[in-house]
Length: 288
Figure 1: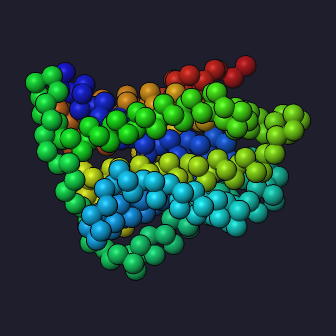
Figure 2: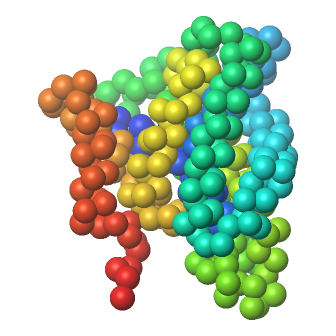
């Protein structure tokens, strides 16, 4: 039970990290390798507001979300939309987007190093134990899991119930057919990319309550998010949530029963197995 609960809490954290990238890649067709840096920016913001003005990270997310939305919208319109316009096919777009966002990640790391320095940062928030089924767990981690659950449920309902959400899903399935029914694909792609960046930054603000980070740790989160997105299926929120939980429980099981040093190896081994035997993701259909 301890392994399962710890794994689910870790999986909730991973879901926060991966949801934003799933939106960006699934709808906008942009494999954003600067996704992790956006998460670190959200964490830096929460850290700064808490240490300087004692603003709760749970309130900081209401500041981080709109600012990150606008910032990512500008990044898409200025840097990425020209790549979409000139791309002759999806393969060319993905290649250009990977190279561009790879460079953007270094720019963002450089700006954070200049602004905050290269030291690790952390702070104490809700860092007291809470008992669940007889075992002690960090309250900040439990709160992060609850935030992830609320965010995942809200995003899933919005995508499946609201008109705007269903339009975004239509773009994710087929941009060409979405245009035929009057959907403004460029406009929705920009909004989806901006929303994905906002979700990622909110995730950074939440996980900053229990993780020690620095300006250069974003690449680690990008790789974990990429693993989860591929495992769960591109553009599928349900798959992302399930993949995050599976990865969290799997890593916890390996760390507890075998060796903590093998958690990263286990994550990539699971990733390889999914690519070999279920490349379309957990809920995807095999191509015909």
